Image (tube, rainbow, N blue to C red; front, side, top):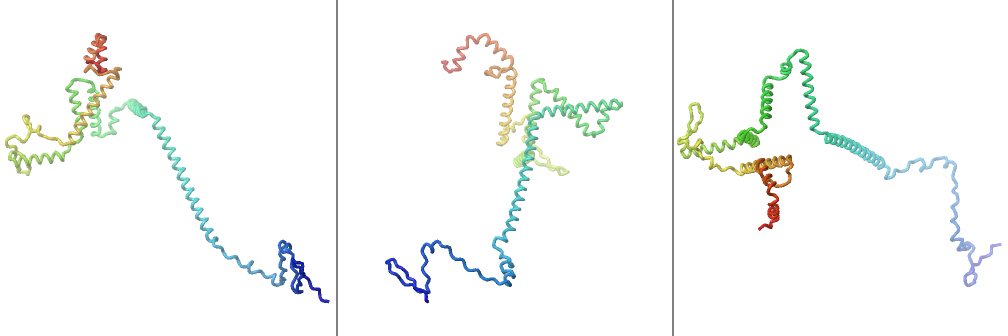
Length: 321
């Protein structure tokens, strides 16, 4: 007996015939929420199951990031090595700076004058000890010490010692002539070496000018030496010559003279200030030229200051008519 035909009911309530070969419509709730049916298992042959699959036997194709992995590791190791090298250099630099700073602080904390005094005392003590040891043996100390020096060195040393002793004895004031001589020698030492090339050029130019004017003859001797002969005695300077007054120095020489005068003036003011500070007279104007004049001014001030106080104050205020 054939199966009965199924009817499909529409919304209008009419039944609609459904063919037998078409399955019945599934409810909407079942279509939306029912899970999808899993496919039926595929039958596997035992022979095929025993054989390894191509995916398991063949290695996977290398990805694009696999070759870059070793290079990235090497770069990281290189950066780490450079960083450690920089750290080591920074540490060494810090240690070196610390050592130098320690030495500098020790040097600043140590008084150089004390070190000089200690070295001098050590040298004197060594000298005395050596002299005592040699004299105990009965030998001549000066003769034995002279073995370490040549004759020229010994003479230079003796000359230096004599000069030092003479200079030490000559520091006190003797007379104004001696003071002027010491000042002159000091200025000569500070003047520096003369410009011999410029002097030679100026001398040859003056000789050529005098020879062209006819007041000087150049004579050659038998041995080839050139001699300048002054005809009327106007070229070479004598005690009565006044040609030096026509000389005009250059700007550099004038500046050097001005600087020397300024330096001597500053030294004089410095000595005066030191002398006033030593006598306790830092304050007040200098109204004297020497000690006698100072004592006389003090005597006048002692007797007449009480009468001239108002006048001096008026002068200082600028209200005196």
